[in-house]
Image (tube, rainbow, N blue to C red):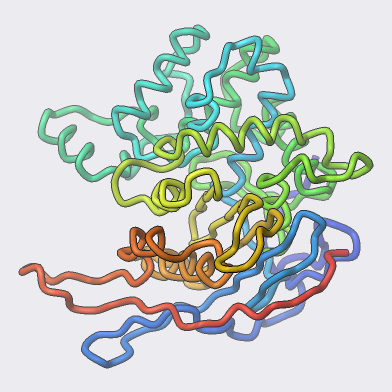
Length: 386
């Protein structure tokens, strides 16, 4: 079983030949990506790192440190669904695309999400009481939370943004006759199966994974940013991976997951002010976007036109804001600007995402008070991931 460590505690890397920032001592400050401006005065800045990588592992664009090691948090979710599909879950359980998508999500806890999960639970004979993701701070959707409070209804775990992911473990247990209690522990068979798929998707082995505990109580995994970008490039075009690549056996499952997410963007986040869903709706069929806590975002960019240039191949992008971005404005602005600089986002789709591109802070009277402005340049590079 992998040992639990924390970043900067060990010089190990998760793949051979990859130089990691872990164990290098104190990191230099990453570059500024977003500036918070109030009436011409710079109040604060958001620093961070961004890397774009193609399916073969070649870096395409970069600012900051591509070897910065971060925990995937919820950005792991699209890959984890493959554990269920590899166990024949789609056919055995009759999974619908919307159900696959919500298991890859950090949903808002809206009624749409709850109904989808409840239908899955009824059909498979699983009790909601088995969910162990907690309820703190949920649902994310403010209007749903206000309605529940007004009606005196206490939200259950099914409204937690990670209930879809937790459902994977319960469904794996159902398929294999495993116990459902304590499914969140590292040595539970469902966690072992999930961990094996994550390792394969990232081209490593379970024993080399670096684990931590996620906010919802299950393991999370740490990787350098450019390996996260490479995994998202794999998600964007799994069919492009060579047959002798160790990741190739996962390609069919990841293709199903990608297509389910693209067809159901409202399941990935929510219907109101959630960047992942908004990006996917603004760029239908082009991008799978999946954020994780502490301001990480993975972007799977499918093959297609890039600005005025000819169509380009698939790529993956990892965006990380250094300070964790409690206000969301940094990761919103940086993610949209990065897609624009990569030629994926322009014209009307960019205008549709304007409220995320340059987020405005509003005072109690509705007046614009401050604006978050992206201020960086993604440099083209050409380094192959070893």
